[in-house]
Image (tube, rainbow, N blue to C red; front, side):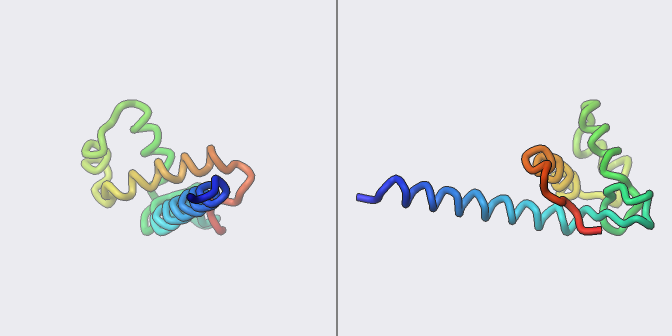
Length: 99
C-alpha cells in the first residue's frame, strides 16, 4: 500500500505540470513589449490588448462574438487570456511575462 506522502508528492507534481503547461500556452499567445501599447499585454502579432477581450467576456460576449469583432484571434487566444488571468490571481508575487 502506498503512503500518503507518495500521493501528495505525485499530486504536487501533476499540478505543477499543469500550471507550467498552461503558462506555456498563454506565453506563446500573449506578450508584453514596452514598445507596443506602453507594455500592456497584447496578443502576439497584434496590437489587440488582452484587456479588451476580458472586458468583452465580462460583458457577456461569446467567444464567437469576440472572434467576429477581432478576426485575427482564435478560440485558443481567448482561452489563453483566461489562463493568464487565473495565473495572475493565483500567483500575484511572480513575474508573469518577460519584458
